[in-house]
Structures are given as C-alpha cells and as structure tokens.
Image (cartoon, rainbow, N blue to C red):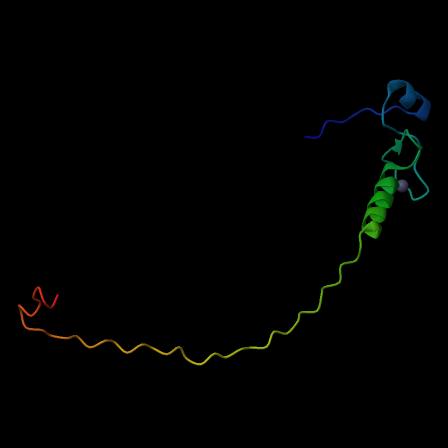
Length: 98
Ligand SMILES: [Zn+2]
C-alpha cells in the first residue's frame, strides 16, 4: 500500500518544510494532485509537458530502406571421386619398396 504523504497547503509552507510539492488549488485543467514548489506548476500538467518535450526532442528514426541483395546461385560443389581402394597382396612392401 502506498503511504499517504501529507502535503503542505501553501507554497510558502512548502518552502519552509523543504517539500518539493504542495497542495495548492486545482489547476486550469482541473487536476488536483498538488503543485511543484519550484515553480507552482500542477504536478500532472508538468509531467505531461516534460514527457512531451522529451519525445519531441528525440529525433524521428525513419526505418532505412532495405537494400536488395542480389541472390547468387552457386553451381553445385563438385564432389570428389572416392579413391579406389587398392588391394595389395600381403608382403608387397619391402625394404626396397617401402
Ligand atoms: Zn494540471
């Protein structure tokens, strides 16, 4: 469960208490979730403005066109002929013919 924080009622009281937010009144858009002590802005409006500024600052990344790579069809790999087994009679290898 989220702990309920008791906010100061006015900006002056928030400054004294060193609180970053205070209750204040509802903003022109009707949010009533508190205001920032630093500039008196509505918390919700400020959050929306900051996130909009963040996304606007990001460069739009258009997907790069995919370059078509020509398909190379290679000829079938030549298979080596299996060497024939040479049958030799036992005792064919001598000192003269290793
Ligand atoms: Zn607001």
